[in-house]
Amino acid sequence: AQKITQTQPGMFVQEKEAVTLDCTYDTSDPSYGLFWYKQPSSGEMIFLIYQGSYDQQNATEGRYSLNFQKARKSANLVISASQLGDSAMYFCAMREAWNTNAGKSTFGDGTTLTVKP
Amino acid sequence: DGGITQSPKYLFRKEGQNVTLSCEQNLNHDAMYWYRQDPGQGLRLIYYSQIVNDFQKGDIAEGYSVSREKKESFPLTVTSAQKNPTAFYLCASSIREGNTEAFFGQGTRLTVV
Image: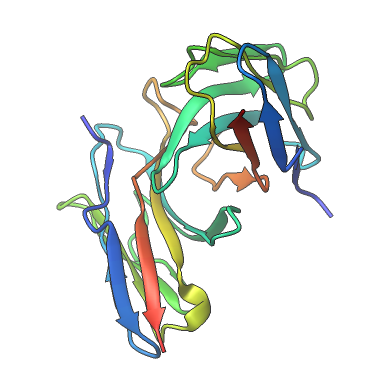
């Protein structure tokens, strides 16, 4: 079964508007972390934001925020005030603490975001 | 500056040849990982190592081999048994325990000619 699901292969957003990238996950581990990475066309992976399974508040980092709904097992990334430089592929990932996958990060298939001027 | 260095950035291999991709980190991380990425797709785990002299297969280990003789280094060999090796390879490291992010190298683009 897919552990991380990103249902939007491609998304478009107008410059300066907000956009939400969807991510759902599946785990039985009570302790896990959820991450979002940005991959520009150069190929490097840039860490954006982290949400722990026990965190009570949604994570925020500058223009990035994570809409964490634990009961629904979703961890959507919200980018506010989109910029042209935000055009990239975005990956949701999960790292589990206790099960046989402990320590490994599992990645979704990614969402390609295009910001229009 | 601390980070992960992958080399080379571009690599060309003839069919039937083995080739080794380098990955070095100076972040003092115990855990290191190799991922494969095909065009327009996500990352798939090839091998990972949680500690020196120990490593485990990931989801797509067939046709690949690794070693972890030093904490700083985790080279990946793409053998001739890998039927479709053309891909983008990313190395990453992290602390072994806890929910922290992985740090990635710049990647190696391997092409079989």
